[in-house]
Length: 149
Image 1 (cartoon, rainbow, N blue to C red):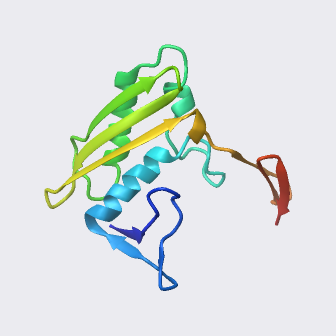
Image 2 (cartoon, helix red, strand yellow):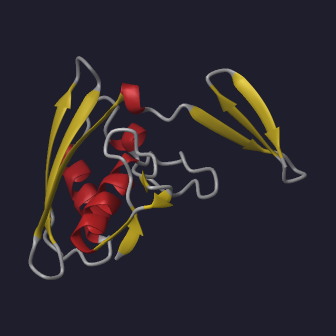
């Protein structure tokens, strides 16, 4: 597995001397897992079926956290090079409406990929895309509107 390195805080592409930094192997797999778990269902306007259904499964009354962990394990195991048997633990904080996710999985050469991330109200997608019948799309972000063709 290969990819471009993302900054772990801002999730922006990392540049080194003006060039994109490439990653591969277990580092790329770990980054891909976090990227997939950070994406909310319906957030990516080119594929509304991509992403994890946080609103439907987690941030609702009486969520089934066993089901959430099972679905997250399947997302992790769908990453190239990750073996079956991913372990996911979750801690739901109702007061802050946030979910702490800790995962562990085995990469193809036997190395272990581990990671932690938090999803919650502060990580809700804030950009909405509306596609017009002509194929143009309107982008709204924090109250700003932009028409792009």
